[in-house]
Amino acid sequence: MNHLDEIKKELDRLGADSGLRSSGEPIPSRLEVRAIVLDTLSVLFPNYFTAEKDASLSLIEARLARQIAMACHFSDTQSACSPEETARLFIRCLPEVKRLLLTDMEALYEGDPAAKLRDEVIICYPGFFATAVYRMAHVLYDMKVPLVPRMMTEFAHEKTGVDIHAGAKIGEYFFIDHATGIVIGETTEIGDHVKLYQGVTLGAKSFELDANGNPIKNIKRHPNIGSNVVIYANATILGGNTYIGDNSIIGASTWIIESVPEGSRVFYSADTAKAMEFWGDYGSGI
Image: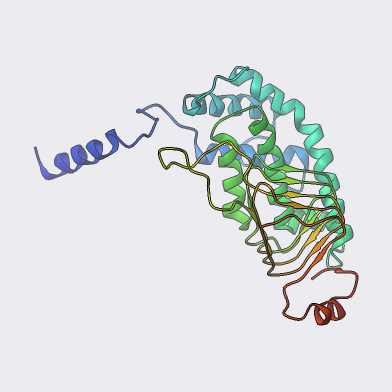
């Protein structure tokens, strides 16, 4: 046995007890999932996105079914649908995805004075792109497809710096401005007409552990954000029992781990009166 064979044997040995599930079976392709995302966007908004491979709905459906089939052996639960039926249902959901995205486009256009055209929002805004990919991935997440939804949102994360977990629930007219550094956790729930600025984290507090010291999964870990809420740059809101009431404004660089009632104004300042005087009653944007 030469030295290369010895290294290969050792690499295989180290992976044998790692808990990985692939067992030599094919896994979903990052490149193909990326292509499916871009091709689907080119169907939703023709001329605004360029297809990577083919913008035919029938071919997108077939390609997605293959990726779902490869992902299925990573799941602990049996899907109620076949990969083919799941992909078919995804395609049927695209009109609703586009309807939601048009509300997001409108929120960005109306909410950002720098946006001169609605077309500009679709073409240029990383927040819109990240939201578009999230809304597609969320459809598959709700159908309990393993891996593929996360692969979709991680593509958007890599491209934009916005990390929206596919499991988050986000209402209509969602506004992400400047985008970079935003994190939205899996069990986050967001109402309608919510604005987030760069660096916002909607995350979890320290994880609960089971009797063996392992993190407990599949519990509510991330906050709920009401409707008509504005959250400014670098604010951090943590915890599954934390609720931000409707019509609240959360100031920049705040740290929130407890609920705040409807209509709250939360500021980071040693002198709240001075902060209120500087801010005013509007919180109109950055």
